[in-house]
Image (tube, rainbow, N blue to C red):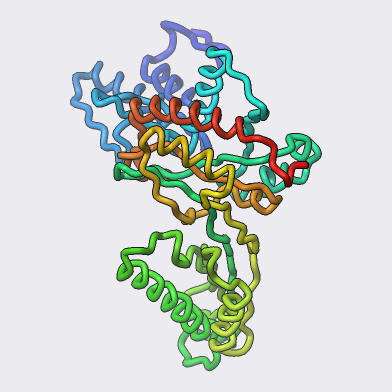
Length: 378
């Protein structure tokens, strides 16, 4: 029997096991985008054909994170349900509603969809605010994302922390792992880590013991990477630790850096630090009732009986670049009675909360776009 042509099925002439093998091979399970769902469906089909009992053990997500499954309670599960594809569609639907009602305003409403916010916004909003296209928008006020709130209140963010990413390097004496080497990088690194994490614990306890504080009011600090060493039996000459620090606008940034330098000096010679991100902007947006933008925003919330909780955003959003460019900005995602699940497993948003958000945005956009010309605008 003549062999089949390479790459082509030979039909009845091919062993069914080979055909099945080749079918499995055609499923693209290569990283970084492996099609595991197709592989699972294939294996379940073959197993069922053989009369085998199949059991899938899946962790974390109840439903696939990109299928947007809606359960019987109207909860929509998907990555981005809260952060922040919800806001994008709510903005668009609010505009659709206002256009259908024939509304027009003294001010122009611009919608911006800007990439890279999750990785710092350096190739997104940070660059965009410097572009002539942004300056041509003649921005008076901006709204950006906020967070869900598990209570009846709605969180409103008028400022945010300054993110600092610091890498500390410790140089020391190398040697054989069997000896007590003096002045090692590891000993210095231990002192560095102890200093940083002691401060972390003090801020954690301050938040815990003072009920008036929120996460946005204290400095968060986490060690996120630790590097060093080449072999079990070699004492390394260099070690490095990276820290993610988020600093409230109430903190003196110069004094805080001096504290970082002191921690490093205290660990010994050959200890240095470098910044991979160092945001120095500490602008906040006015929430005084005399401010026309806040008066318009808060007025709508009062009319709609929305209870607001004013906070400093605990992480970082594109708002920091807008504020740094001299424009007031408020972070607000209309999601109350919703657990905070951004970047978490089983991220979801209830459809009624989502729809209510469209109505809230429509009212807010109407009020903000009707703010009369301000003296500073000429």
